[in-house]
Length: 361
Ligand SMILES: [Zn+2]
Image 1: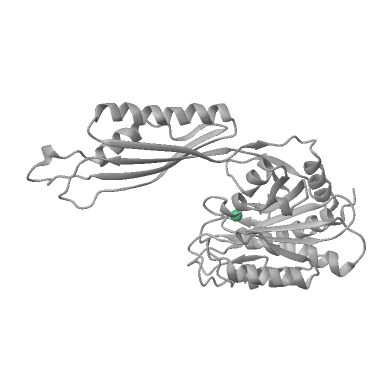
Image 2: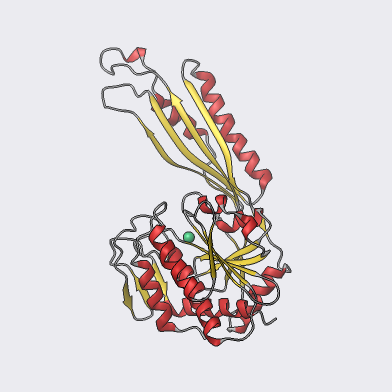
């Protein structure tokens, strides 16, 4: 069975390896070594995502997590306090997603040590998930045969299964006005900041409806107090679990930019809207949902099938024909310095993962 002490030790060991997005080599080496020691065949695709295979009988199942973490995530000092693991407060914990990686490794260890029959397993540990699902976008799907799987990257307990998630359109705007001395000749300037402000007041932002959200998360522009600002960059997004709404509100963004652009013919206003991932909505009767629900039941948990407002590698896997769903990894407060891993919930997630591998339906 899954072992609590071993699971916690794996989590601590992995957290101590820095792996901010784009710097996953050390984590890659560690997990590849561990997977090979367990008898898996370890491959890398051209993006150096880790793909590892354990032969077995029956339908293969994909078990996934990601190797990178957000910032501040360097020199993390994990502190075990009873049933929880936290950082010292100066960094994130990195439980997202090292709890997920640890859970998969613990379940595999338990299965291999126990011996006996099990399903073929395809482990996929992606790089650079945070901020763009980059590794998943580059994943070589020809190396994977599973059509069903789990993504160990969800907040909360193992029982939380994300069966629906939104599409995301990334919205980037560049505004080029004209610089001028703010005290001597302001009439010769065109303020890009003012244009950006006018655009922002016209955008639908925040929670638009139960399926749709929009945000401008960053603006950057201007040089000095005494210069009419020439340039502004706007970084935003629209998400919806309904693609018609995604299109509708993306068009509202376009209209707002155009309306303001018409009033500033001398300014150059560029807008780019591009889709980064597609929504999914998996039926409760889908075999993947049944597989997860059954395995949760075997460890005494009732599945909670939820719709999320966030995207994950699962969006990309599903776009590529693998219905792999995010499940909880026992972690709270992702992406904050309060991030906490709850050991009993991690253990349940590992036990559920072990049941999936054993495949006793
Ligand atoms: Zn994550």
